[in-house]
Length: 63
Image (cartoon, rainbow, N blue to C red; front, side, top):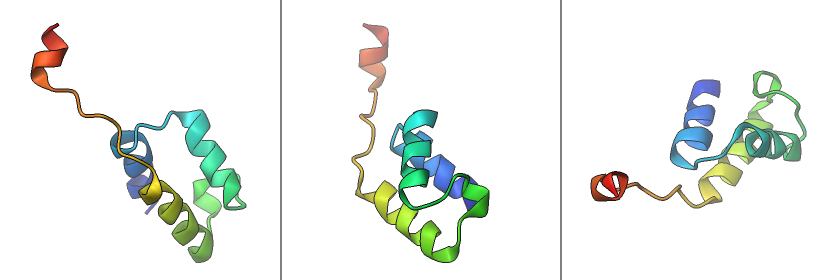
């Protein structure tokens, strides 16, 4: 579950480590390894509510 949260936060949402940690602290925890089920659900809801990072099109990478 921790890997899935980090994949969502860093991969899909584009959060850096500092921003991710701020969201973890916002649900009352210092580490994702210590999340209760309720905290996990709250963190997941926070992350899902964020916009996805912009997709880079192959044409844009060449420019």
